[in-house]
Length: 209
Image 1 (cartoon, rainbow, N blue to C red):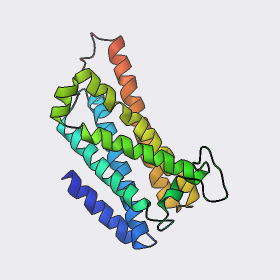
Image 2 (cartoon, rainbow, N blue to C red; image 1 turned 90 degrees about the horizontal axis):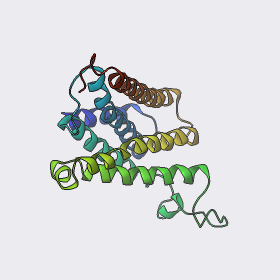
Image 3 (cartoon, rainbow, N blue to C red; image 1 turned 90 degrees about the vertical axis):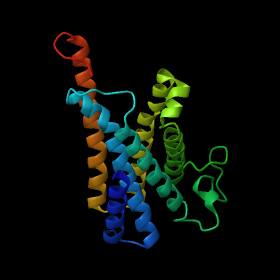
């Protein structure tokens, strides 16, 4: 259901967005992937806000996170074919005539790509351990510790997207959608954290999840 919904929305975006087919596919996977990441990181805080149990791992959050990773990796694969045909290294390495930092691109384009690459690596890591077997092998404490890297992942993903909004001069509608998703994630995380703090200071009045 989650995957089907994501594919349907991505297909609709491909039909509606401007640009070449490859560019539309890249944008569609990016926005759907970000949306699924926002949902994944919102499910826990929403459980807390509703006073519902909030287990270490549950199927809906796990499945949504895996689909977010699939769309994110798909976006990365497509994005790396948008420029520099046959010279993919120029996404990350300084172009001829420029030194960069240790040979790496240091302009906004390079920074966005480096950030995106790290985010993709985190996506893959978190997706690979999003299963019961990994939870048993790593133990609850270590598994949760690794999964908390999802917050860094979200920050890097939003930073990557924000830079590209400027570089590609995205249309107002796309910028608004991007900002709305980022703000929604920040708002629900902040609300969930406040609720948790309130529960800790009033243990006799609120039943913890």
